[in-house]
Length: 123
Image (cartoon, rainbow, N blue to C red; front, side, top):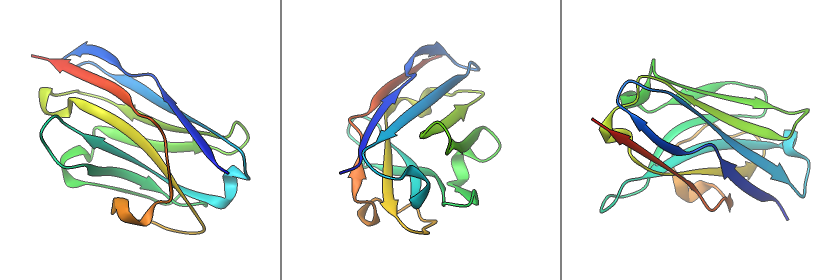
């Protein structure tokens, strides 16, 4: 069973940056396509970025040019580099996994989820 553990969240001022990490264990990480989602208080969960097994990526429009998703298959870790943070980026960030080659930001397609890490951006 795949297990995902996020880290790297925190409180930052607008314009700052963070790097989120998601450590994956329990199965062959390189076989999974991965994604980052976020959920702000009172809002629905939103797909932020996804990366398939071979490194192709997609992003939701609101984060293009500011967020970078990457993966290190040797370290079984997924990353999300977040730059030029805005208050509207505040929320709990989750990593998710699905076996196979997927490039999608719909949360219902992912089968494994982490517990989340909080990002708070102040203006």
